[in-house]
Amino acid sequence: MSSQPSGIRPLVTALRAWRRRIAGLVIAWAVVALFAGLIGLRPDVPRLGVVLVAVAALAWYAVDHVSSQQQTVWPLTDGRLTAGNRGNDYRVTNLAARLEAANARPEGRAELVHDLHNRLSEIIRERLYAKHGIVIEEEPRWAEGVMPPELWEFLVTLPPPDLYRPERLDQTLRRIEQW
Image 1: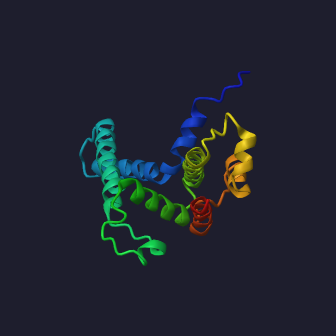
Image 2: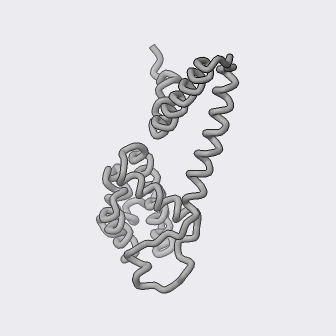
């Protein structure tokens, strides 16, 4: 037996967040094909599937990218600041949409937590280098000595599963900013 996972398992894992969309597409394909058959048409079922996939891909792209271009309001900071152009960066609005979605439904939470942990770890490492000139991989003991214990633990442990929650994320960000 090979120790490598089967080819289908990574695909299923990658498509987990898309389950509803794929199921909806398959149902729409079946309904349209059945309806066309019932009214006496002879539908070309494979071509119909290709057309539905193309239309759905365009619609999903538009929904995922156009809706994130709206003005993002961060209540903790925008209440104090009067700058009118905060939140126009695509990355910020995309992150805000992903955080909101993670609070609403469980699909994609693990990937979001992983991405957040990686990005926050990069920020901590950059701060460590900027403040002390230390690269954590080269001098881990020195790094541990100059870093706050909470941030060191954040770097060397698995990400907390609730990192996507606003109060947890705010606590981590404030600790990074205070250092």
